[in-house]
Amino acid sequence: MSSKLEKLENNKVVLEITVSAEVLEKGMTKAYQKNVGKFNIDGFRKGKAPRSFIEKVYGEGVFYEDAINEVCPAAYDEAVKEHNLEPVDRPDIDIIDIEGGKGLVFKAEVTVKPEVTLGDYKGIEVSKKEYNVTDQDIEKELNSLREKNARIVEVTDRPVKAGDTTTIDFKGFVGDVQFEGGTAEDYKLEIGSGQFIPGFEEQLIGAEIGKEVDVNVAFPAEYRNEELAGKPALFKVTVKEIKEKQLAELDDEFAKDVSEFESLAELKADITQKRELEGQKMAKQQFEEELLNRIAENATIDIPAVMIDAQINMMLRDFDQQLQYQGLNLESYMKYMNSTLDQLKESYRKMAANRVKTQLVLEKIAKVENIEITEEDLNAEIEKTSKLYNQEPAQFKTVLREEDIEYLKDGIEVQKTIDFLIANSVAK
Image: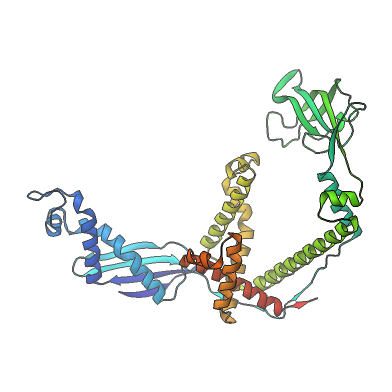
């Protein structure tokens, strides 16, 4: 096999690849073996006709398509390695010439990773934020624990107040007409949750059990049901049950009930320590993001659209997976948001472009600075990853494929490069 490289604009290249007659012949033989059972030739049982007889009846080109599919991928891969290319999408293949006994010539046009021109990436000044744990932070965490562990008790001697959880029946009317979807029985509603149309919950404050209340509201102009959007409505509501939260006192007994600690002071100390660690993690993350953004801004890259599109699709798959954890999917989300797939993709475009640029910059810096991945680095990453799957590192390593190893190495390289950049930055 031999090949020639031609560089085009927009990070595209064309490889002209020549496959030898010998290699093509092997491909033709495999194509014949794959398809011989499909041919009926006079004088031979089905599937037993020699290749020469089939080609005589149907023409030599009868096996060309499958032979091309046999030999082109390997020839293309070899040419890519020969010219040290990094394709970022599938190639467009164009057959130039093919003839048995002479070989095959084809062209492959493909988009490759762009050249990266680095700007300054050492000595970058980045402001370092500090997150101090305040008494208000501790109080907020303790109140959250009180809310989570609150007792819910039924109330019968007073009307509804903010924060209550009510059980209601309601019927909704626009004018004198009861509208579809505006009726429910035994509906659970927390007053102040913002679950209903603005103004609905507030008008239930003061309502008494068993008495019907008129609630007048207006649907938002951008309400998802276009037939109701912007229209005034009347809901006839009956409160059937009122329940309230009873919060425990903040004392040592509370600490024992909600944690492994024996006193409120120990619980507060634990909350403080955890919040401090969270603050340190957040500060480190923000410092890292600002540093990488500054370094990426200093670099010059003509990013191929196909790379950005691929990143967008990856982000959408991740988002879809997150939605599925919540019992939704991308289609239902778009319907609820009155959006299209193209609009959603476009909303991700800027973020996707920034991610691709940062990734390319990190790869370039890793090469320039000779960031190396040692066997020790890889083994440490395998051990860390194996714990996520509750497996022993040695056992986990046996099931890793070559592409899994490469994925782990890529992650190690990125992190080591980021660590290098942080070490060579200036915090202010």
